[in-house]
Image (cartoon, rainbow, N blue to C red; front, side, top):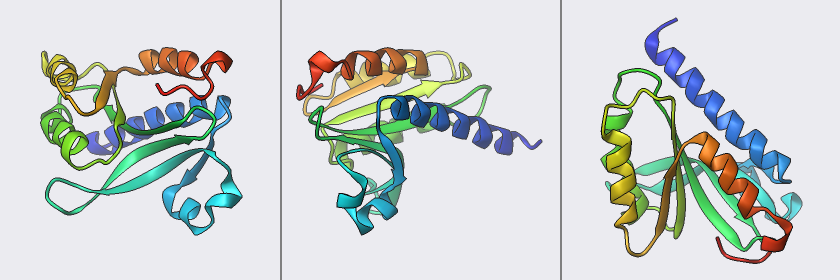
Length: 163
């Protein structure tokens, strides 16, 4: 299997894990395109896929997910980045962070970074710089930490609280 093909497949596996986890909390996974045709049909607890935005260059960009919940008063963009071995994913972290800050309209963003193959210091750089953002809450976590976040965020005593 070609290296890029394998990376794409493992990246999709991370996205499936995210979708399956959120499905277990009652979120319906649907593409943003399908949802926008008839939002009322799909309810108020949805995980949108392939969510569009205009990137820092003014060009179309897409995020893996947008979590929308009336019950938990939440609109949260989720980016998934998988890197199992050396490659260029971690070189794109500055571009991703700048898009989160300047181009994505949501105030809450989670970047799930997993695979263990990022260059030494790359994930730490992303985490440290995300913490310095003043007008948004940008979390950089791995999938295990995302599971912990979801377990806390979707507790019944957390209903209608902002995360």
